[in-house]
Image (cartoon, rainbow, N blue to C red; front, top):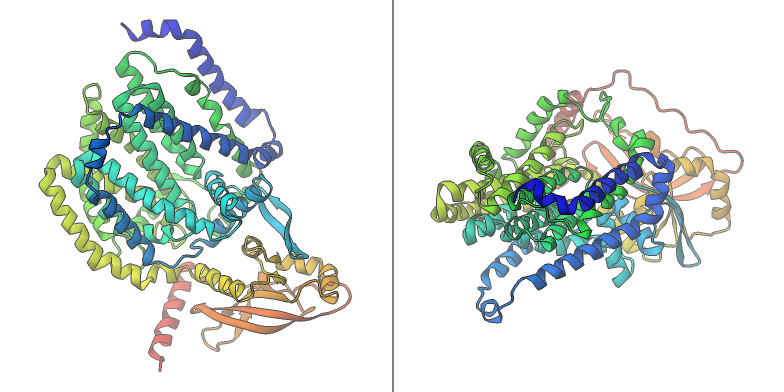
Length: 621
């Protein structure tokens, strides 16, 4: 039977699939304005994620039913793989303190989960207050971050009540799921020894431990990458409609986990096309016909970037005028190599993954060419991995063209996690291909040694955590909240969202200045038990004098009394103050920020910081 002949009876289905693809493009990018698109996501995003999650769960149940179950075989299965996965997950979790590792990202995700739980809308709370003991969200806005992770966190809220710590609970569960999937994929690629090596290499990555104990979406992204790859391997072997539907749904949910993860739909589409080509007929079901429409929420959500140029955060990196450019590649590659091969433990990298991965990479490329050339007769598991390698490559290429794609930056290191995973899979694949089982077992020993000699000391020292002082500052704020559990106070903080997601009334400094009369009304009427202000001060390296960050200044109308202060980094002091008096009358303007006589470049700023640190260290008693 020819391929074209097989398609003739299903021509109507092909036409419907094509029409749905066109409809998805029209609905996602043409039918609605940016404001209309965002409103659709705000009020429909939760329900879309709920439908996708239910469909995915049903598809997995169908796969379980399709798999023959033999109790005798199940009873005789060894327990040590599960024990290995559990032990390694515990290693990742016990060496890090739970907390918000990337403060703005994780607070935004938690805020979205909060409104998904309370109101079934996809909003980040921008205003909220404690009203007679009940916290009320007054308004919010749609965040640019995809909705799958906030949805899962909101499900935990639904079952356990709203708690900010549910974000940590989700990632704790995902740590076990991720290593379990890693073992499964490694075993399918290179046998039991391959599964063990995959788990051990990933356990030795401090960056993974850092994200497993945070509230971000990076670990869920890794879980969905491995889930999609594992289901792709199953589909490549079984080539049935149920396997295909689960595989496609996993890819769709992966696209709704992180912005750039939509690139992994490239291997999803290619693998489906390869299976259809191998079968010489398409595997078309009613589910797959409607699959293009499942990406409409992603396209609608992209309107955030169309309507808010600030979403690209170009202002955070002066000198950059576009988010993506080939011209950024050389600099980003230099920073990537600095991240992967740092020996100091300051970058949460794994030397074992870096050294073995970059040795394996050229051989993996040759292996990939060999597999693709023999695609018709290639092993299905290996072919699926080879196709998925295109997703890892596209993801890495995009980040190298990203204006902020510097892997050694404390905020950006997490973006290297998919590349680290890709390198681990390359190591396992090439070790199995070139050295066999004995070589895999030898590398398992090397991985354990690297874990003991480099990774565990790095996790214990937490040098990479110290770099991102904002995260430690967030822990300090959480300590304050724990010590004041009544939450009947108001915080004035530029990052008001952090307090709002902890159900503490908050407003940013500009709002407190513009609406001083309103704040004064509540101060006079004792609406809140107290009003606090969070501020940062820069330390003069010569005199020790403190200069307030301009955006943190509430102006002369607010009289403040220091309550707590702490230095989380050498040249900056963080302070919590109580408002003791607010002046009557019109609000006084905050003096404009004084421009520096000679703005320092990042290199000059780092030179000053190092010189101050050397003097600081030398003068310690």
